[in-house]
Length: 178
Image (cartoon, rainbow, N blue to C red; front, side, top):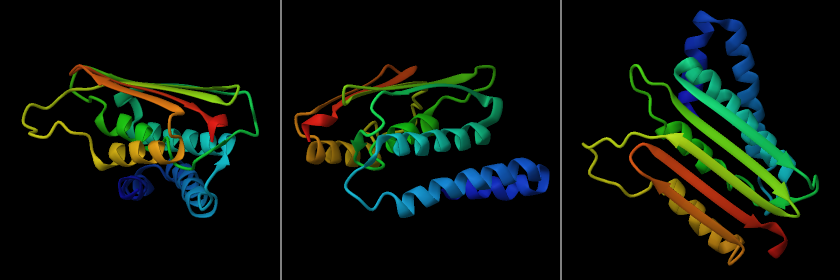
């Protein structure tokens, strides 16, 4: 959040039109977090719009440094999901995507809901930094796993893999099991 605000501050001096657009998107993100996410479940379509807004902001922040492709399909417009459950996966993709000279990293996000079952697939380029002594995931992934166990016990599958070059997340949730 603070990185986005700092980026907007810098843009205000360079490109006020882009800064204005980014600020409006960011206000939509905050509005959703503050006013819609105080319930146990939210409408999936609204949650996906929130994720799209977040992705749009990140794409604007990183510009041409990375390629981002997304696909979102929702068949049941009334499907419900726990709020902000998928955000850590999106945030991690942008946080850890490789950005090295002479190589353009990528993020691919595919989301599909059909028959109250969601499938989320995220792949991003990833470069493990050998200096890091910790290879354990951050608190965001730990928390989302705990939330999945509490909210969707035995109704989800989560598979996270990385090979030093690609980081992949595959999540399936059976929403009708709750």
